[in-house]
Image (cartoon, rainbow, N blue to C red):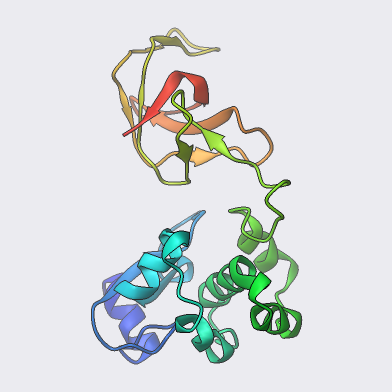
Length: 192
């Protein structure tokens, strides 16, 4: 059974965040470890757009979290926590956050994108042009890079897809080059 069908069955063919029944898609909750239904939610285009584009957030749309934050499925709880954290300055989201309980592992997953941190404490990864990099972005190498510990040279112009961010150092990202997972310094990449 496909992930979309499993999520549709789990959610009753509704957006697991706002209850919309149209334009539903699978949304992977990053960072993922295994993928699949345990790391995804079924969400509508409106919710996905506002999750991925913080400038598009409509506070009134997210009042739906008053109900969906109690969902038994952990990925739904993680997205609810992240959105409430993003909007907490509005007042009512902070009240909902104060009521919400996440176990230690779930809270760690929810915080993995830096959503719950104050802006001055949030790690921001930037490419060579100063463009902000996000988990899952694609980049291209702007210089030949010798890979430490191997004879491999990652060539200039190589595309690295689905990058992962180092949550301790803004200068490092991870990605696969020629099937090998490597650490790349952000000053040598450009976002595609």
